[in-house]
Length: 303
Image (tube, rainbow, N blue to C red):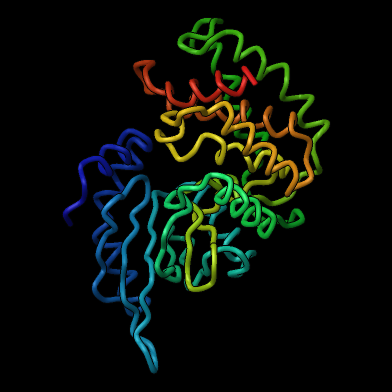
């Protein structure tokens, strides 16, 4: 199987030995999925990142469906995604057609034309669309389901100071201290936790035959206000190239506050906390990386 080098590197760097095992067994998993679900013409998407995703055709009566096959490294997040898709049941999210939790692979409807929210030039318009997409997905906290808790994500930041011998390394001390001080208050003041997407940004909202649809939910239990965080730092890399990103951010916050009913300051603070967490996730073993997210955090801190 001919896989992009960047995909192989991402899997190896992110998952270590489990990633190596996944890559070695991937051709066999694709074969199993094809036999199990009647797939033909399995073609990987051109921009593979951290999961194997492919276009495929599924034989059915009386027509042949075009579908998406997704296979990932055995990981808690992938099980959370499957559970979220099952619960959403196509309401505001891509439809889950088949799944095999033991093999961490599943089948999704293919969305046509599949244009991402990033393709829209007017930022106000796409922020309104994102607000609609968010509110369609939020659900009461289900019982006995393997969803990720937002508190678990932010607990990872507790490793930051030990990593840098009590300091903050390339992270500005003022930003880290502000997040440490802000998070407890944010949890206390924010809305009760519910099931949220967890990664709802411009590339995870697609236009389709059913309107604007969310894909790739993380399936997170947390305050719905957090949902704006990934949106505020996207489109990735392009966002900070705008002519006046401070004004753009303020516009986004105003629209989201009005549409979702949350205080502006609270949304901005969740955006700041998410940006620092995102930078921590992007930190490489050699201490580099995370610069883009930190620049976003600095921007939010100055508003």
